[in-house]
Length: 213
Image 1 (cartoon, rainbow, N blue to C red):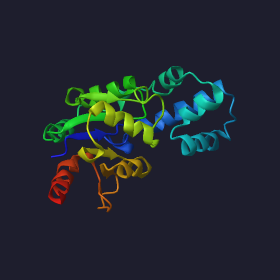
Image 2 (spheres, rainbow, N blue to C red):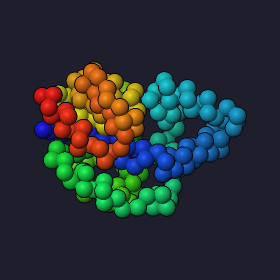
Image 3 (spheres, rainbow, N blue to C red):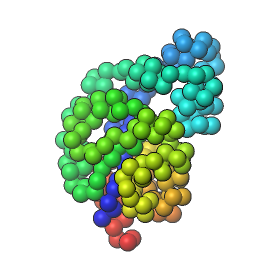
């Protein structure tokens, strides 16, 4: 058994098709246009530049524009979560079958994570939400974020597994020695990595990992 499993939040515990992240994207664009006067035609390229360079748009905004992260996150996450998500009993059953310690590891903030987990009905199944604030606002895929969560969990990387919907967030985890599972593609991967189509396939993946030793 893997002692600790780290779960990404958005587009991992719920599907991208829910539409929540699309709305968050829209809110982010609105913030940049209204607060920083970024032209609408340039906002996508502006965000992409910071996202690729720093891991999140927010990190770039903090470094180059002295943006208050709390103000930014409160605005972009002000979305009606319960209009998109409902109690997910199948997800709850899947998570309850996992005996490992379960920790949310997200570039979002704790308030947003709590709203998502409460809507899905699984908040009580997670030991902690290790959010962007707990990371010191240094997000995945920066290796420092992974070191910080391992320090909290009190385990070595070899005793930890990360589940995320973005391959670029899994590479640093593997470099440190973690096992990884990519959500979304449904195809097996190599280099101590696995991939599943849905979080509901988690226990089958964990069984395969257990046979690897």
